[in-house]
Amino acid sequence: MPRYEFRCPKCITVSTLRRPIGEMDEPVECLNCGTPLARQFSPTNAIFIPGHFAYTWSDFHEETEKELAKNPYIEKANRVASAPGHRTE
Image (cartoon, rainbow, N blue to C red; front, side):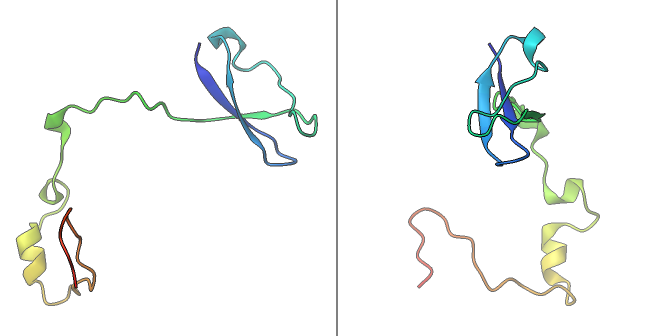
């Protein structure tokens, strides 16, 4: 059975319930205060993205990352992204 998330508008409690698809919009009451819960959108974690959909910066921008790094109007970040085992000290 699929899981659905419900949120209480009064006490802001979030509950996850397993229900049949045909009952996903049936009313549910909050276990804490008894207020009717509102169903929330919750994306699934079973999304598969094929490798050929891996985009790079240049797929969305006219400048490549190398050209962007040479642009004098772009400030460089002070922070360096670290890799496992990389020390920034």
